[in-house]
Amino acid sequence: MATDTQNVLYGLYDDEQELIKAVKEAREADLDIMDVYTPFPVHGLDPVLGLSESRLHQAGFVYGALGTMTAFGVMTWVFTRDWPIIFGGKPYFSAPSFIPITFELTVLFASIGMVVTFYIINGLGPGVTNKYIDPRVTDDKFCIAFDVSDSSDDEQNNLKSFFSNSGASEVNLKTL
Image (cartoon, rainbow, N blue to C red; front, side):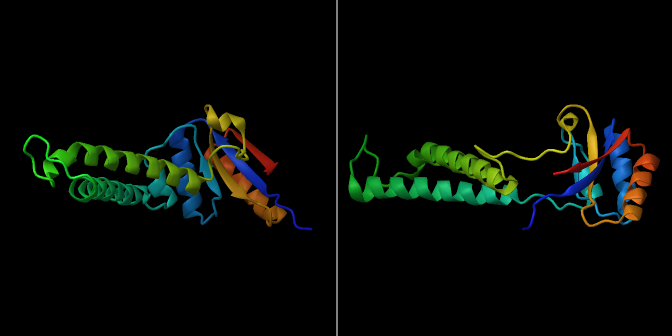
């Protein structure tokens, strides 16, 4: 019977600058970082970790374009085919009068689409219980975590010495 447990060795840091310095040292030493946890966004951490830029803005553009096409298409159909009425001498197809509703649906589709995409990608949503390494990471601590499920004792000792040399205030082992 397979288990979904994972042994994680993590070090807690008191300052984001110490964290960035430790991540740089870990990357230079070719250590395989499982994840880095911070209580707030740390500017400059993504490039240090080697992460690429998020493509969420591209999804937002697609959702916004879908909203624009939906609004413009529905209003065109309604005012030219389904219910053609001349209002105040305007023609059936009056694009300038479509702009406010088109703008609103563009923003609505983009915002809802991006929120739903963000939640799906990050595994968030109602009823989801996420595992956490240490509750202090959501408050005032910064954390670097290594997966040591398949590591030998020597490798774990090397990681512990890395944490002590990089200024970690605390080192712990946790099974998730």
